[in-house]
Every structure is written in C-alpha cells, then in structure tokens.
Amino acid sequence: MNPQNDEVIQIFKESGALLEGHFLLRSGLHSAHFFQCAQVCQYMDKVTRLAELMVPKLAGYGATTVVGPAMGGLVMGQEVARQMGLRFIFLEKVDDKLALRRNFKFEPGEKVIIVEDVITRGGRVVEALEQCRAHGAEPVAVGVIVDRSEGKTRFDVPHHSLATLSFPTYEADKLPPELQGTEAIKPGS
Figure 1 (cartoon, rainbow, N blue to C red):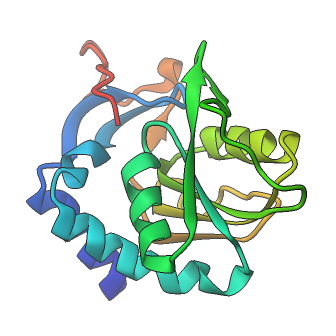
Figure 2 (cartoon, one colour):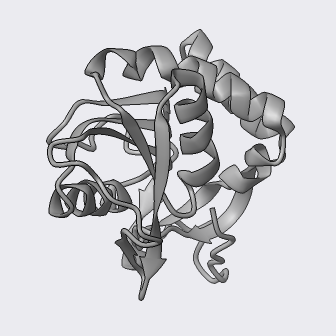
C-alpha cells in the first residue's frame, strides 16, 4: 500500500468505520468488509483531513460547484466544497433513485465535481453524473474516499480516489465458505 492508502484506512479503523462480517453492498454484491463512512463523518477532524487529501486532486478542473449524492457524499462533499471555496448542493434519493430537489438549480454548462464516499461498481456516481447533465451541469471530475473496485471502475470524466483497495466482493451464488450460511446485513453507509 501507499502512505495515503494507509492513512485513509487508519482513519476508518480509528473511527470504527471498517466493519467485518457478512454484508450486502448497495451494488448487490456481498463482502466480508464494509466501509461505514457515517462513522468517520461524526469526527470533523477526520473529515477535514480526508478533504485535505482530496482537494489537491480536484483543484484543477475549474468547477464552481461540488455535488454530493445522498447519503454518502453529503458530509465529505460539503467539506471539500468549503475547503475549495465552492458552492455545495446534494442529490437525494427518491424511490431509491437520485434526484435534484429543494429548488437547487445549475446554470447551463456549470462545471461540477461529484464527491462520493465509497464505490464498488460506481452506480450512484453514474446516477449523479446523469442527474447533473439532465439539469444542465457539466461534470468535470469525480472524487471518492474509497474505491473498492481496485481501480477498475471507470467514468466518462476523470476520477480520483484517496484509497484503492481490494477487499473481495462476491455474487450471491458464489459466496466463499466463510460467508455461506450467514445472514448478510446492510448497515448503511
């Protein structure tokens, strides 16, 4: 691992946010490890540090707004926006799909950065990109705290992660023996 990966993992461990057990991820995959970012987000010094690591990766895109998909991108997105001196808005779930609500609006062609907590396949980020475009914004980059895909997830804009990890994930019908016969839980991000 690299020093930044190590620091991010240490922040998750100190916060009690790196869980072990049998988890059903939002992607539909199963895993023995779960990143519960809400546990990190209760400690503002840790959120501040994670944003300090992310801001240099996102600074050169000319964005005027940071967009955080609910729930995972809310706290981190707001802190990244604060440190960059940008506007922050969020997308929220409506019938389990992201939507722009609360009278938020984009200027035509407004450059935005999407900030998310954890990706496995990147489904919420893809939804966020689509929603921003549907409302006239131009996404220019994505920042995530943890990329569980080992760097395999791709978007149509540059994306940057603070930690790229290889905790294995499994389809429901291909569980390893240690997860078979145990109930998968969804603890929430």
